[in-house]
Amino acid sequence: MKLFASLTSPYARKIRIILAEKGLPFELVVDSPWEVNTRIPSVNPLGKVPALLTDGGEVFFDSPVIAGYLETLNVSPHLLPHEPIDAVRVRQIEALADGITDAAVAMVLESRRPEAKRSDDEIAHQTGKIGRALDELERRATGRHWLHGDSLSLGDIAAGTALAYLDLRHPDYDWRAAHPALAALAARLFARPSFTDTKPPVG
Image (cartoon, rainbow, N blue to C red; front, side):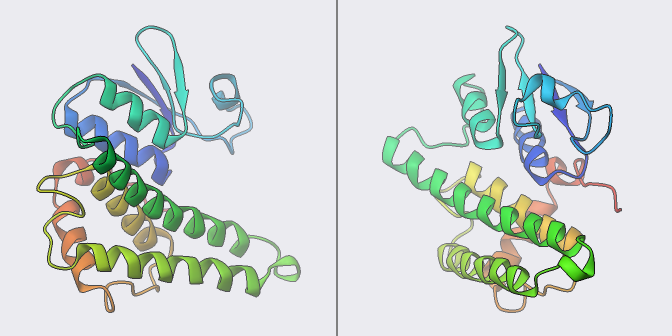
């Protein structure tokens, strides 16, 4: 398999972590959609990473879709429960965590606009999304070792990736202070080799 990804993309990092947890071999093709000579549009019409080229030549893009594909390979550890309704619940946690990432990315893009065109209201709107989603994840994490069930799931990986992205791009946002259960979960996740080995470069 080939994974097209940038080293700083939180969505691509989520997939790299899944691949590492499952021990699946793959070739990492480092590419950024923002580069002039990017090859990403040739594998994903939306021009976004990550995109996965399977051994059979099929391409999957968008991190939830790729994560779902990797589960079909039936390689342990299984990151989605076998019970369909529980799998949906884990997917909802993934969506909640990805929503934090989406809002955090939107804040980065807005902050990079020329000052005259920058919208403080938009940044506040995205910050509100993050706060509400963090509160919900905190509720789900309280009193638990993992966000769902008794083992690491896709929801935990998505949450860890989102929290790590907040640390990377919004270091002044002190999400840990009001979310001790999430902080404890993040500490456990960040210590795993799959997270340490995929830590993005600063910059």
